Image (cartoon, rainbow, N blue to C red; front, side, top):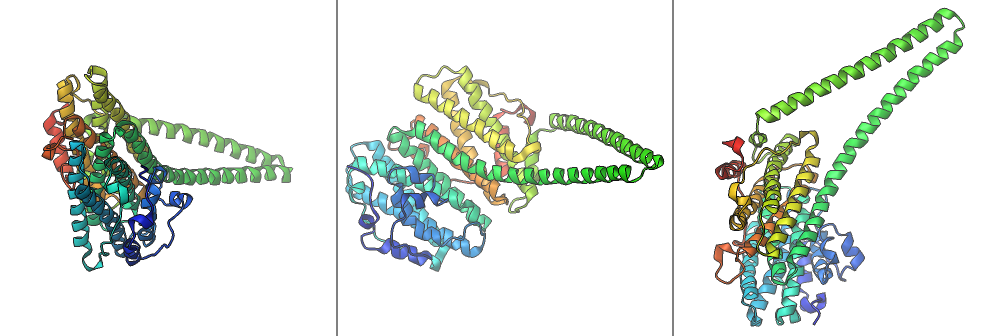
Length: 487
């Protein structure tokens, strides 16, 4: 049976559309595919089977959000938008757990755990919104909550939609505390998405495509910023060229308008001196640039780049803070990238699943390094030397270390989300944050966390991911002894 549903069947009572109206807008008809793809928040999910349904239900609440505007009023609209999604997910899992006798105990464990998480998300959002929270609608999910196979397929679409929904609103959030809270849910939704994909046999390939989509979202924002800088530099060059051309034209006019030889000699002499001065100036500038590069290289050798994180001012949004946060993130990505690269070279993996995980994640981490380096430009730095010891030589140690690194990465991004100001940087951080959460869930699954009774070893051990401060993360990195220069 197809897992594609329609809005009229799920929202038979019309309560969902009433809730969307309470959030600030009303759309009588579901959005078509082309209209759904135009929506920034769920464009990536729109291509998946069944995603048009969830887009149609969330679009009314999304329409209340003013795109590109950060304000307290907009935060309320965004939180109600998130609450609409959480109502849907919570009801979906509650009805499935009540109606389906799961033949697969691992799928039953996923449904119970995720259902509990979604209920916690609803309570948290209602608590934050208070009297401004929308009402809970009634749902009719049909076969999606009575048939096990249909449930699994629908859960894949629903969880991917949740990840895209939170990522799409990150740049519209005004309050740093609200953004931090959203990040703690955003990564858990990504863990759910990776977990259900693993259970349905589609984690590896689909996770790679999800990473590519989310990475492209970050790259677009970075590219736009780079394009603006390039345009400004181009305008400056054009102005300089026009000024030089105007001066040369004035000299030519002087040569032709003054038959006297003295004027001609003066014009030629002036042009010659200017040309010599230009060449001397360019040579001097080149020498200064070489000296600056040498001093910069020496400074990077003397001072480990982790010291850059000390410049982060918690709770402050500024361009300087953005640079400090991105440098801090780049160090972590260098660490992870080198870890997986060395592991794939040194370990003969016992199963193709673990080998594929290591190779795919190594590729993702390399892309994260490239993304952050592009954002930092000349402020980016090369990786320091690492010593991973047996963690990149023994498979069991590798998997245990990978779980620690990925969980730490998720917590590190969650801890810095509220300190970013530039929207392009927020997009980049969100795109990496959710992929790190997928990695964390994936390696936890490989470590056996999918079975009932796994508890805190499961792919999604809690309803909210914990955020760690930069000092906590740096202390954790220091304790591993992976970075000798940190002592």
